[in-house]
Length: 510
Image 1 (cartoon, rainbow, N blue to C red):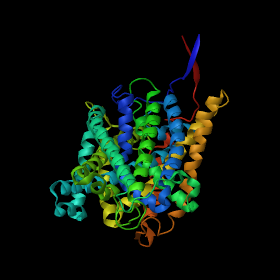
Image 2: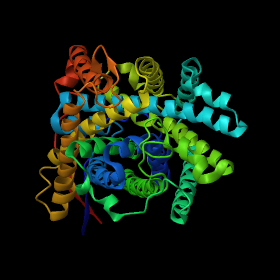
Image 3: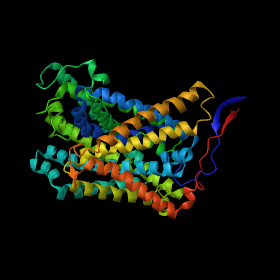
Image 4: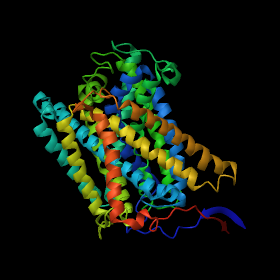
């Protein structure tokens, strides 16, 4: 009797020595949500998003969710057929060849380095804010503005997260259960209290709820829409961590894809409820509690006490700290495993393929990512007065780049399967293609926008906008490094190590 079909394992995929069956569906969902870091992400992105689209922030969250969900289906199908820790790198090599795959892997690595630096910066800020709140000390709060204190503290956070990630998936999973539960519980309390106080009419800045907030067609301009979407893409980034641990996941090849989709659905609910609550409570004014107040980079730092009271407000500071620290740790997972995979297939130097014999983690790659993160954040802090905002804008560009390439690789890799059934055509063709086109359009539009030196917060280096330097500069650097590596490792770039091919589907027999 013939049952479901499965894909034959591809002979050129290599085992990398990672710990097998060390995490299940729940753990994968928790790790993915932790990487997205909803509380940290919201506090850094709510203000810039409202600045772009006003009260239509929930519409942006919904529109940004659509390509994420579509691309998540592409990841799910590719992971089932090619369960490799290299994810986007490996899959785009299989579909489009070594050069496209190398640049896709580079995009993922650089996006992760940017996120790690941003996480460390937010974590450091809320560390001192939480201490200042707990001890009611402005002197402690002001330490965050002192770069001689802020940067070393940030580097200490990065070093700690690197050490935890270095020790393996089991330690990571145990820490994450506590940190994710804490941040989601505090976020839910904040939402309930904000809506309750806004509805009671006791808040001068509050505005009444409107269903028009969810209508993207009411946004004033296309430029505002794309800028808001670029921020929204950043806010959803991280769910693909569930796929990066596919070689370490228990329960079969379908588990990582399920975890990714569940994570995306949980995140959109959290974002919509929080977006509505903050709009209702704070409004979109440019002064005081208003979300358009450019003086406030961290929304929860401003709203915690007014919404929750001085007694409970400290919980929000702790939640943001927990969110950023938790994500700082799990975000090392995709970058380290991508570098491990690239090294295994000779796309980067062999030293990155070292796996710790006891912890079964890509030790050298993890440490390298930590060092790169610390260096990137230190340099950006010196060059930019608004490093967090600038990196968020640049990150949206990088994410769209490698997510769209991965979505298109799904369509091309499974092209021979698309005529088998309507389902195959939809989940492997139409849906990934739409997701890739949407993200590709945002990438192109953002690429044009960042050419303006005033884009983002208007920071410039030698007359060039800092967002352009971060986003475009890193992609150009990737091309240069790829050409150097092509000379050092011609076998990979000739397609002799990891080959372009199409999947072989065979029926299961009972």
